[in-house]
Image 1 (cartoon, chains in turn yellow, green):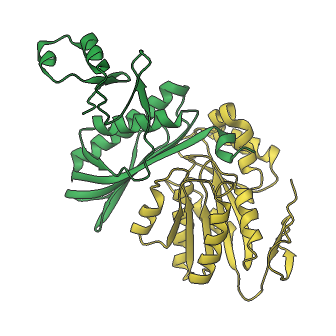
Image 2 (spheres, rainbow over the protein chains, first blue to last red; image 1 turned 135 degrees about the vertical axis):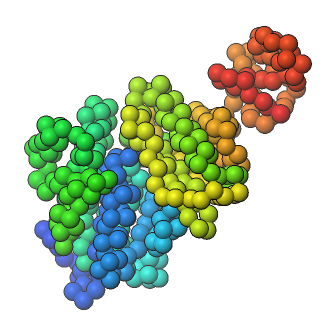
Image 3 (cartoon, rainbow over the protein chains, first blue to last red; image 1 turned 30 degrees about the vertical axis):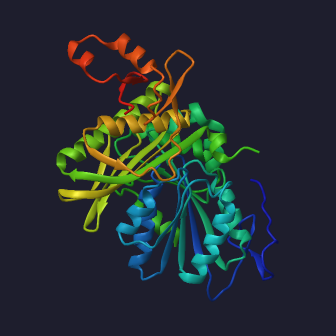
Length: 225
Length: 179
């Protein structure tokens, strides 16, 4: 696993947290928890974004959301806002590469204006979430913990491997937890095959879930605690 | 240095605008519209890899339509009562397709949907052109008067009714009115 060390942010107590191979600025009495939802196009990131958000809102936490769209017009930002979520949308590019400066500014703005307990970021399905994490860390914002939730799509797992293997594997390579999504309606063999493939490559927990039937979602939310 | 989208071979296109006369029939047609875009992507690349999303909303509610898997079809979420006017957003993020062609295909799908969709041209870089096999290009909404529209129409004119109509150019696989 590649090591990312950041010491370019504002001066402060940078520490290793949660055995992560990178440094974050930690404060015991505050700091937000950051979740970055990684996964290819259509893997179910937005569904889990809502699931995680509702979970924390129900627990009385203040949650801020940032969604990123590759195109100049997005759908999720307006939908989330119409559903009552506090969502910031960064369209027309990718926050892992072409919009890193916008992400940098957005994180600072969200911390200052909303100061959330939990900050959830949904990059585009064409982003590398580890780069998003690196940019957030480099802002020097107080972060209690930062985790990448990788999401893979069981029904289309084989075609992603066949057509986009290098990118697909890179995209989930630094996940702290992997959700094996859309398992409902799939054969046990297929789901096992995906799990076994992931376990061979990555030494992180992989949970079988379904955003549609909510199977496994409780276990996932428990894992976040 | 490549962007992540370039690494993945992906591109995205979006439009927003107003929909006039939303009801259950319009919702069904919008679902068909997303399927048409998805089938086009599949025909281009052998498999639709990516997603196509649409939202239709008013102050009182909204729906989202989501297509990620052609065999599963379009998933509909939310509810929206019939309304005279609503806002829509549509976006497609797909791999291995040409951005201009995707933009083009979405426009045609909207045209063909049978739903009144007035899309906002703001930020729309829809400068795709159509060469009609004779070293000449048209841009949508352009009436350049080059005469080639007539040539195309001549090739197409099969019925007397069409002959009486103002000549039209042909965009891709179908006739398209450039007026």
